[in-house]
Amino acid sequence: DAGITQSPRHKVTETGTPVTLRCHQTENHRYMYWYRQDPGHGLRLIHYSYGVKDTDKGEVSDGYSVSRSKTEDFLLTLESATSSQTSVYFCAISEVSGTGTLEAFFGQGTRLTVV
Amino acid sequence: AQKVTQAQTEISVVEKEDVTLDCVYETRDTTYYLFWYKQPPSGELVFLIRRNSFDEQNEISGRYSWNFQKSTSSFNFTITASQVVDSAVYFCALSELTGGGNKLTFGTGTQLKVEL
Image (cartoon, rainbow over all chains, first blue to last red; front, side, top):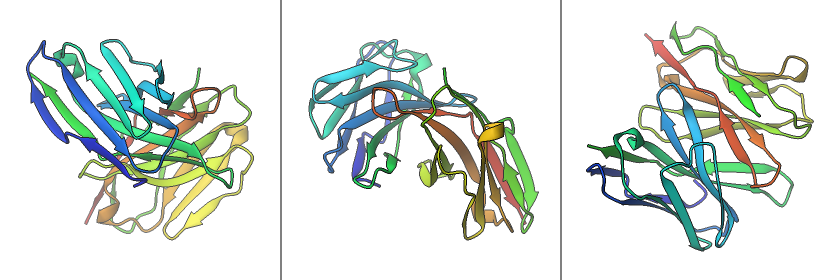
């Protein structure tokens, strides 16, 4: 599992409230990603990070912000949650190994419901 | 822009049947990786295989096999002698290696149901 832990695993929140999801990794990977999974869409990239304090937008970044103040943690924040952000969120790491092989592993997912 | 198409939304088979899940991709990159992931009902994403664009050899792992054809931009996945435990959603994904590490573009997934 590449040492990836997401928290919380499940959350129900009200519309308009801020929500922060945490992704923690233990193997010093440089690149970290947040995806959301929705029926009919597969997984779509929200934001990604290529180092401490280095982040960039993905395909569906509107309404989300991220922060990475240390290598092991990548936080995803919904500043004001909306029902359209009800989804399953996955954190991922991706790295080219020492043998030149690309590896990509995912956390267990966080199911977020906005009511 | 990269794109992955999994045209089969849902497939139902009877146990022991062989089943092939299709994946067609689009990319302008000459170097890329293709992945298959399995998502069982429990929800986690399980890595199955990774293939780079320079290696067109087919691969077999137990009952699983993969057919990569650059000429048709396809990376199909076959399960031989399917079992109920194979029931899951299967995702094909394509990596973009330019900047930002290795961002993945996913297909919409194929729900496989294996019945007794």
